[in-house]
Length: 135
Length: 134
Image (tube, chains in turn brown, purple):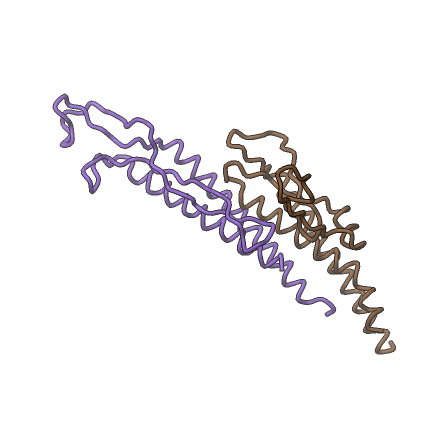
């Protein structure tokens, strides 16, 4: 039974974790808005969630012992999802690609979707509780 | 927990921006300082930001990597009455540009506000997370 409840919450829990990680990435973009040469980062949420649910994410980087080896899955990743760089609309002279409007909008959007996931989990918990209590 | 990390990230940015604001205040205050403790006129200072990793996480914070002195030429004004004037009657004044400093000040204060907003949002999300199932 406990396994069933766990399965029931699995999807929203994964989504919530991924939303929190994305929130952190956008927060670091906003924090680095004035840092020269900083490149704005984000993840592709849809494919990251699919990867996390199917367990196909989390590939480990390949150790290269010779410069002639092919590169494996290198680079940054969060929860198995590769961290991508945003394409700047109006690049600035100091090499910074943070667009404050985009980041603020994404931050608010992500926060709202995080709250939506929270709501779903809350309702799931209430469902289980009412089933246990019988009314 | 990623949401707790946001406090470190936004916090580091707030520290960096307030340091920048400090430097701006010092530049503006010394706009007419023809002589300093070393007997030389004040030179404008600028902060250099750099990213700093936060304990093995994907997000990155900000730090002030250095405070550098502005290398632009000093302002030379003809004022024979001035006690610091040289034999030709010229005084060397600081290379502080008040317009640049005001722009810097507004930019720093806006960035600071943005990071406060980020922190507030994260705080609200965390509080709501703590009340799951209630």
